[in-house]
Length: 324
Image (cartoon, rainbow, N blue to C red; front, side, top):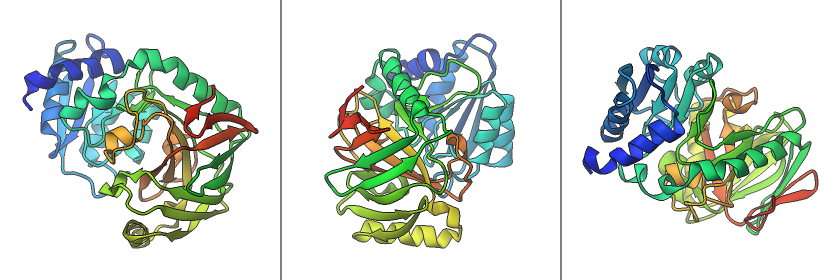
């Protein structure tokens, strides 16, 4: 797909979501797998400000890896950073540091040219924002969460003292992070508190597993996954984690609700599944960029169908249907 076919989507990202203004310093931090999306974003940004820099790195090995030092420095220098990469660096120390310094960051993980204009990209992000913010407020106000699914998930989370995040894709303040085109509300549970069973029966787009053939059942104790059961996908996950030689990769890092109305179902596509409306995903590994305290060698998410989520005993999702 040529730039002309996706420039409209790039302009939506730059103007409506990233809120790029005249004179702002913009970084497009891409990798060698995403040159077309990077060029479209840079072209759209240059229509507004001349201060646009594009960096090109080799793809990271896993989601959560650190970018090169040059890219980390550029993130700090930018006022707005758009990150179209094949493996997400959202949970890296480099991005976390940039956010604390006020850089507005929009991650575009594994976004293809087509996904820049179709699917979740077609959402009315401004119309969806109030619902996302309301869910974020509900998460912030809650002390405890209980998640169940027909596939067998039954897990509790302590949320006391943690703040919910409203990732509506709109970068309307310094230091705000969001990931396109997710639209989600999330929270990092208190480290060491999640207890129960989590069954991923939808997809695990990280590690490029996509839609799952067999459910992946995870036993959780004291906030960490202690057992992984299932088919070939479960075997792969166990091997990847074991190979990292980092106990923090088993940390329950995130409880998230997908709220993009233009993504009605899970497809196995990274950039779409995180925002699939009415689904829940659990993030595992690094939580530091979400309000937690854990830094791990990776971060990835597993999705589940038809979740029921209660906050302090009151349902906000029931069988995948919104109740707020």
